[in-house]
Image 1 (cartoon, rainbow, N blue to C red):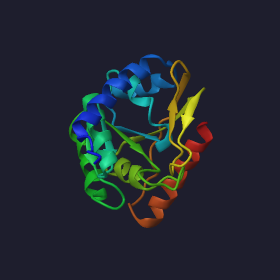
Image 2 (image 1 turned 180 degrees about the vertical axis):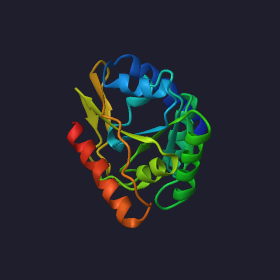
Image 3 (image 1 turned 45 degrees about the vertical axis):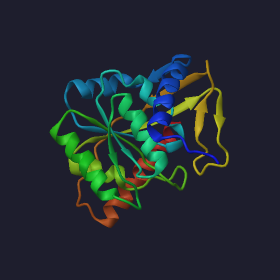
Image 4 (image 1 turned 135 degrees about the vertical axis):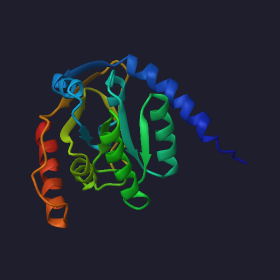
Length: 210
């Protein structure tokens, strides 16, 4: 009889493995100075990226205090525990469960304390590289600048059967993190037409960045 491993044990093991794994990678950050300048000015901002490119990002957070949206699934629980061990805050929710509450919690935290929001805009279940409205909702509520982020890995293992084709950079490979130009949402009310327009704008900026 197969006995499932407890989630805290899995997350602790992944946390230790992640730290060792990322230390082998050769990082290059493009446009990071824009983020640091906004951080020093205490400007609210939200980093937006694709789900499949998430793996290497948190290793370069340095002084940034981050709150991330994580799904309420079992996999999400493991990810949340790993992120929290890395020093991040998490807000649990997805498009199917607790989504609005999670987004509101992120927006409130960004406004009341010094945290950068972070969201995989096509997660947690896709479609792949199709931005959803969550980042726009958070940015509008918190009056935050939106930062498109893309990550290129020189050599990676791709989980081809996963909905997002999740990428894990192989040890000693090069990782380039591109921070796009921070921008403000257009003025307007948070209605369906506005959300769709700004969602598509973010999606186009992400695709153009890499």
